[in-house]
Length: 226
Ligand code: DX5
Ligand code: ZN
Image 1 (cartoon, protein in one colour):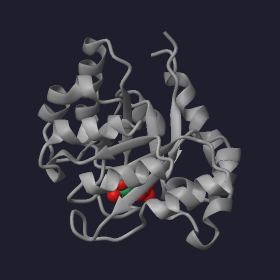
Image 2: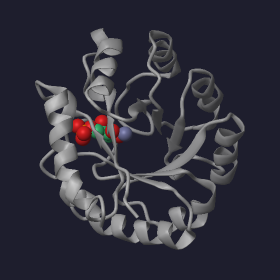
Image 3: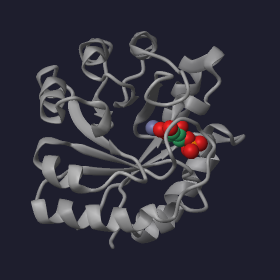
Image 4: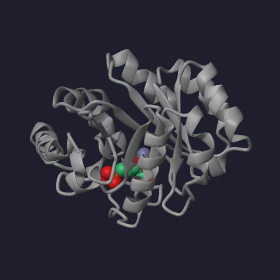
């Protein structure tokens, strides 16, 4: 069966002074999701933005799915805020939650789609245990905290293993790769089983978003029927 690939620009690398326009331009250029990196200077050593900015994007007219990646601890208190602000997916790092099942339930009961974000050093046992309760897996290919880091190739085998778990489950869980994804490595990454591609500096750091996203789609095309 033909696959569908989604491109999710991370707004972490956008020009924040013109955020609405930046997001509008990447969507117009062919992006599918808005990847929204929330950092708290506690779970990760960096500080970004909260639910108010998510709501501003919705108020500005952004209709694309917003894929909220919470790099925060504790997790639960922020969920209702993001749901109200218009989040579509909400993913968190299992190590940051006191009760992973309860956090996943909380996301779902707030009408959002739950996901788990897995660091390069985090075992896949979390995915195995909670696979039937999640809609997206954010496989980190850098250590979370900063845009513009290099892709960690050791994560490719985790992608293959996770893809096999998803196929075995028979559920349509999205497998997102996050960190160091660019037009020149996206095709290779797709061949290991990812179907959602986060790219921050790889898109916002380029001059022409449409050319970059077109090039990404061209490099993905050979893997559509794999
Ligand atoms: C890292 C974030 C990523 C990152 C992606 O903590 O979760 O989403 O911003 O940025 P690039 O594509 O520049 O690695
Ligand atoms: Zn992210």
